[in-house]
Image (tube, rainbow, N blue to C red):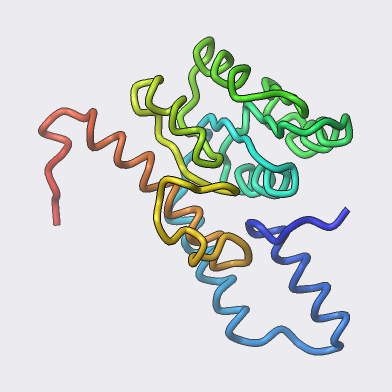
Amino acid sequence: MAELPIGLTATDRYVDALRRLASVGVPESINRERGQLLDLMSDMSQHRKRVAVFGDPDHVLPLCRFLIELDMRPVYVISGTSGKAFEENIQQLVGPDVPEVRVHAADDLFTLHQWIKAEPVDLLIGNTYGKYIARAEGHLPFVRFGFPILDRAAHRYFPSIGYRGAMRLVTAMTDALLDKKDRECPEEFFELVQ
């Protein structure tokens, strides 16, 4: 199954497939974008953060792969569509890196919320409807990703695939986590040191 080019590996595969199909080299501009993404990934590592992900399986699978590449742990994964293949693909993807992963293909946000209540996560990623869980859980860091995004303007204009989309996603995740840290840290750690 071909994945949407979300994140590093899926985009690498996409670019390589295009290169082989067209019998051309990868343009320097694309190599530069990839290098920028790698630089950003190394600078903004969120080591071992627990993440809950929900959405369309075509988005969720490559997104989970990207989270693992970022050394994050997608511990709760829900797609809302039936099919054991999705669950098996996620289990195989996370492997021994995330032994506590819980995956349900045909489940809903109620189940996801119950999991988060029982064992909290550091970050929630999904469409607009995740905002209710984020608010109920004390403003859990939340990144809007996928469809639909109904409560924010202009999301459709920003990339979500390719290297640029991955850069945007890393920045959004890191900003959400750092915003929470800023809200909760003691005054002496809030100071900006230049």
